[in-house]
Image (cartoon, rainbow, N blue to C red; front, top):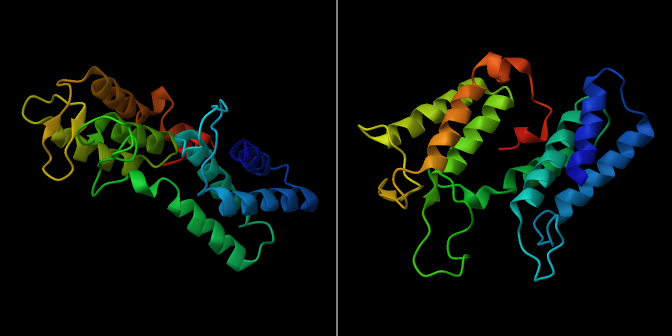
Length: 208
């Protein structure tokens, strides 16, 4: 929930209303808590009655909390070493899911309890491009999409997974989810579909 609170503070600041000094101190304390505890496991938003795990939603919202705190620190007093700690904690979140280049794992390989390996899940890459477009980072989103389109081969069809080491297609082929995710990302780059020019940079969906 810290992500929602910090995002609300950033939205209030962006609206021109500003934050009281005491409000900023509370938000900064929240950011400090997130920076300290974001590497820890938790029970997720549904409070699963099982051993705590690393949940993507929790990590994304922790990233949002730190990102908004960094943004607010540009106009509010904060110690440089504290802001640097926020930067380090933000950059560390979800870094384990990335591969070389434009591919992303849907979860850490070897954690699903099934036999066999886990390749990069192609829809995740398109979801990142979609988020970048909605965040106003159109050039970065377009570059990622161009790289991913090349993985469709001569037929322009996308698989479910891609082997990061060989680039080979794995899983269901063609995969409808991969294609629908690509279409949504491409449409997000168009202003008339609520894309970058509509300015969604303060939305939690702006997380990488």
